[in-house]
Image (cartoon, rainbow, N blue to C red):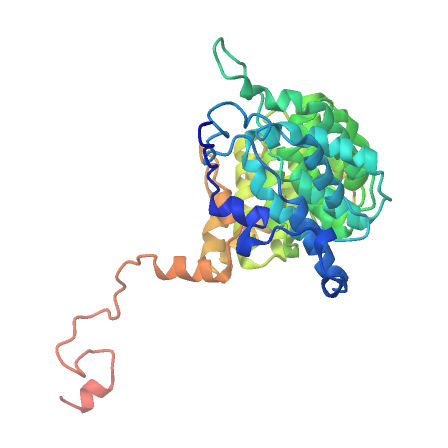
Length: 435
């Protein structure tokens, strides 16, 4: 009598994915005529549920089949099944994000991560869907599931799994280039630009292939230019991209609209990063200092504090600019401010010959925090820069809470110690009334 076959353990999560609840094993061919008359959404849901029946070989709750080795075929990775799933996801007409959300639970498995990008590229090539905004959204939703690991030097005896990023490089490049060639909605365009610098560019085999896309985005203006800043700077810093107009374009983005943008915190954080080098020309930093000071005059109070701290940090990095605060040729003695705010070229705006009268005028600001921040022009520059991150998202509520928590010294309310209710010499009532 042959030995009893060991039953395979099925977890609740696996049963939900495979559609095993309530004993439902039927496919589309076994349905009754009444079921076949259901609407298209029901048909898509049934098709998606059938496609999601993906056996995964390295499920931690699986025992790998029978003891006699007959279950080896069951644990073989289903590449054709995975390609079928990707083909279903990459629809040019139907939004598949709900299905992709269900598929995301399989990304936790190592074999799916290894074979995913290759099978996705194969499915995209074989299906050849029509380019559309829907296809771009579906492809983006799938690509962002794959988090490529940073390449690390492997030592002798290390697990080979550390090389996943190297194996996926070629397909990773081609898939992202295909996505960027599709028509993108404005919302998806912004999401792609946010994702590129940290999760895409460091893992591409040749990031310079995205140069045209990033530079064209940088020239659009508005929020799109702000979001493309980090990608362009990454190529300049790590891949020696030559873009002489980078700081001129950044200078032109410092407008009042930048203070009302939802990306304000991100933008000014990047401005601080881009101007962090001490080797930038002094005339260029002076132009940014003057531009930020002029912007602080009309900015809301929470943004004024941040702008003033940023100006102070730039002057700490370039201490030669302190002449803009204590130069006797300041704006008070000159017939007019030599700074030309309408000039787009930082080299010809005349900022180095001007003074920071804008910051000096903010010393008497109604909001105490703004006045205290602007008081740095009255003394020597600090030795260290001010941390800017904590001020990027400051609101009026934060300013009020900080002022209420501020401890104040006791203030004398009278010049003479009182001896009674009406008993001080300066008051005429004390000569006529005694209490």
